[in-house]
Image 1 (cartoon, rainbow, N blue to C red):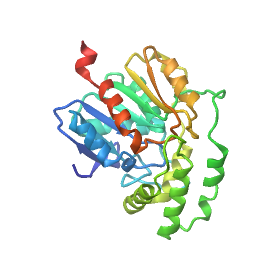
Image 2 (tube, rainbow, N blue to C red):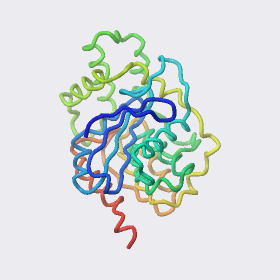
Image 3 (cartoon, one colour):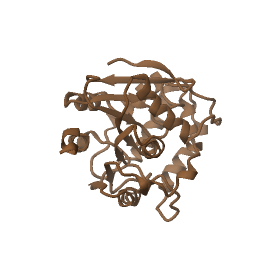
Length: 285
């Protein structure tokens, strides 16, 4: 249970594992502009304690993985998908349950379309369908306005950066639970302390690719669990509904009042749902 830098697809990817490799594997994929520490270590340990081999990793441009200069992007959604599968390869794992948050849920969908023999199931949290759906509601304007001031931040001043990160995360909080500022400050400190180049995280806003797969998600025939909050300001609730409605047999778990988050007060529900969804004995019966 320690971080490792692995050479995958010609880049460096930072990974960490929890539990026994003999257990079914869960690959945790975080969303845009966030490193793997958003999958809280305690969250990972609790999954592993229930008989899962848990992997988390930093996508390109966040955490300790390869970063490119801010404003430059040298990869597409396909590269992020290949990185995810490459993480499995590096651990000698043939198939895994993909659990993705936000963009991570879309990476999981593309992975299942490109590599159907590698993805046992998908759990998409605060995510949406990988498709062109202009009718779906957009991200809240206040979030775009807030992050438009990123260029004004003194990225060499840790306290200013912490305040900026925490302020942005507060906007993601729903009405279900109170925002935990102390916990957010600790997370911000961890993000800053382990980032190769923190402003590179904004490169994720430039990710493109995979347009040829639009309209294909409904072809998926693997177990899909969608967990979505009704107060998500980034990918509003209809995005989760659209994903669940697109895939035959998909199940939608609604978190009333939850935002674009995996709030600690919801861990028990979220973990129990993931464990039930990835219970291979149950799926075989």
